[in-house]
Image 1: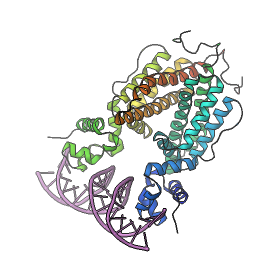
Image 2: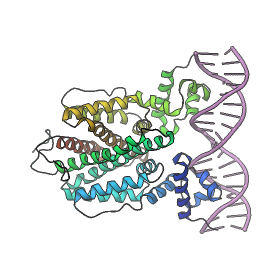
Image 3: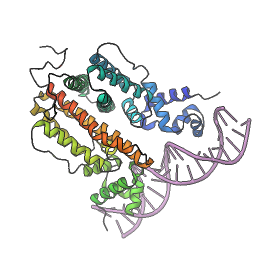
Image 4: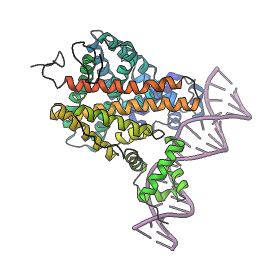
Length: 198
Length: 198
DNA sequence: ACCTGAACACCGTTCAAGT
DNA sequence: ACCTGAACACCGTTCAAGT
């Protein structure tokens, strides 16, 4: 029967979960779907685009939450991290798709974070920089965390749980640094930086 | 004559500068050096390790600077960014090597930033998280900036200089957010976060 | 000690030709 | 419209054998 975009993305996600990003190749995916490699190129222009679709599938459940700007940022980032951690190499895949500009959901998330920054009082011409800074942190730290996690799982290291227990706290700390930075940059009564004129 | 590690790294850097990371393959590098592909594996265990050596070459000029903690962070990050931008796909290569734990210089930089955070008054058990958060920002934003830069250079887009003029400011803004966050987290007279007890 | 030659087991992508 | 078959131009890595 006919091959549909959704089947391809689903199979790709399965391959990712079971074998990791290194084994997620167009040829292997085609084999899994029992089609020829060329068939995939009828549905997707190239591998990057297909990976972008997988990224968006992974990020499906991450939407805007209510509350004040701090809550919105913290919740969005927390959900983003959870989504990445729930798939093998999820952080690496989404990170690459984001860098390649192939994830529509990441673009949406950027807008959500920028809006929160706006509500915090960040000047309009800096809300996107703010949002990107937050995203760089979440992606960077989660890639790190996940590579350690998976390395430990493979090696069956005894000291693994120690790392794992700290990773929540590490993430929360970095995120708070950013939220506090946004808050500081926004309060008129605090001079944010010695070099700032006015 | 004999092939030395340094010659290999130098040739790899040349290939990177001239053709980008996608064309920096072990086989192509071997061809450039007029040796067989297998020869490279006498000097380097694998491609990751070789890329790590290239990363460290790129980062050679980034050391610690004097001054107070804010100056040290800002200068270190500025030099890091400059080093990355001065090689084709430099940010992407160093980012990958950092994630793979193959860059000794990035480890040193992390220590420099952690020390600066300590001087700022960040508790000892959080200086590394702080340093990593800063590094995630520099790598993430510079990967972004460089991909836009190189895309514009390839397309000869007229609106390219507009982006370029803003990228210094965008980088400075994100970095200030982090520095302000560190400062806020450190001053006893400012309650960093509503949820913080004590 | 250092390198060659040749192999192994793969890649992404294209495209004429088929149904 | 959708897919096959086969090709093109590559990869990273290993390893017996040579010098």
